[in-house]
Amino acid sequence: MTRTRVHNFAISLDGFGAGEGQTLDSPFGHAGGRLMEWFFDTPTFRQMQGAEGGSNGVDAAFAANWGAGVGAEIMGRNKFGPQRGPWSDDEWKGWWGDDPVFHTPVFVLTHHPRPTLEMEGGTTFHFIDATPAEALALAQEAAGGLDVRIGGGVETVRQFLAADLVDTMHLVQVPIVLGRGERLWDGLEGLEQRFDIEAVSSPSGVTHLTFDRRA
Amino acid sequence: MTRTRVHNFAISLDGFGAGEGQTLDSPFGHAGGRLMEWFFDTPTFRQMQGAEGGSNGVDAAFAANWGAGVGAEIMGRNKFGPQRGPWSDDEWKGWWGDDPVFHTPVFVLTHHPRPTLEMEGGTTFHFIDATPAEALALAQEAAGGLDVRIGGGVETVRQFLAADLVDTMHLVQVPIVLGRGERLWDGLEGLEQRFDIEAVSSPSGVTHLTFDRRA
Image (cartoon, rainbow over all chains, first blue to last red; front, side):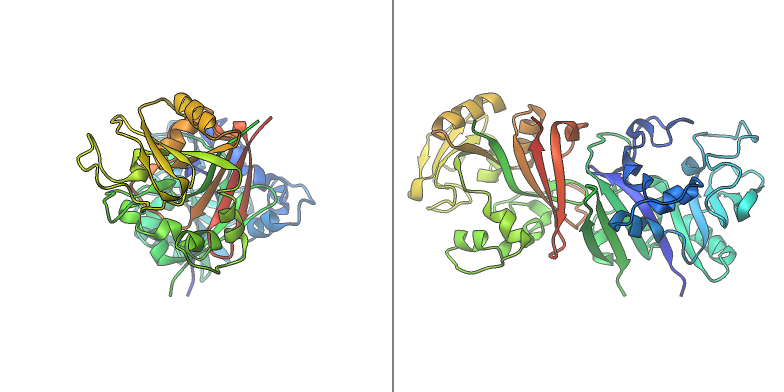
């Protein structure tokens, strides 16, 4: 059985996974980089930047789990880029550079499909207008027997949770109060009944929350 | 300098400190006892029930801090009882029994003042229509040089945080998603800038969050 997984998904104390006002320069809106500071010194992030070294604690351990055994990702359009509505600029190929970090097929959920983008390093962006279940079926087929990662953003993770399609989830709760933005928990009353949940606090100040679907 | 303190205040993952539908039998509404399960086996709670023994871990350690050095409490009317509007039943003297656990003056915030209730064991309920700052001044005077505890509920803690009157706060985040009720964080964007915050996860599954006002 392959699994559908969420990793390294950061939220504020008040449950926002992104702030207000997402733009080209501010993928997290007014949250800025604060939701991901715990991540920046991990070897996982440094390798994404072409650097070496990094931390060796609990943050690093959790961060490293995101890639192993994953054969495809599903992301919302807002994780690809800040554009809304019909695509006005096909030349711009997302926030992830010429050689995106994914190295697998990536299914971008959008009501405005566009041609597939083949990037360097094995990442292929497919743009699909699909329900969570339809997208997951496509991604599972593309993953070739490996797991599927739900990459975010907030709305995408919430939709997959609401549809009960998530098997494991790793959240990182950051001790800030954002006050506004996109809230993960809305509409998920009773979610804990479907998962075994653990919490592990880190010396960095964040708390790692893991959810494992109950058998 | 005396301090204004919050202790043992539990919230769900989605930040609700109480559920919907508070009644005489359900002080936490549809949350039931779930927000306080971490507390039930602590010596602090057991002593409140006239029992002995209890757990000896991190939950017990945090729970025990609530009373030492406290000379008065301020609580919202909803922590005294579920009645709303003008008092219709002066005979009922709150959820706390004949010998309430507080053993100090307690100031109950209400728009409907009523005569002071002297209970057994040193608890006196004063019913006052006051701003947070006014209530704190009264409580500090009554506390005789000791600290003042802000006892809840949600609206009361939020108002004191918004007015920047809280010096230390201990929250207990419980891994449940309540979905509805009274949310602690609303209107508190940027709260982290005023506090040093620590998180400590417990084997029981909850995470203790402590806030200390920055100098």
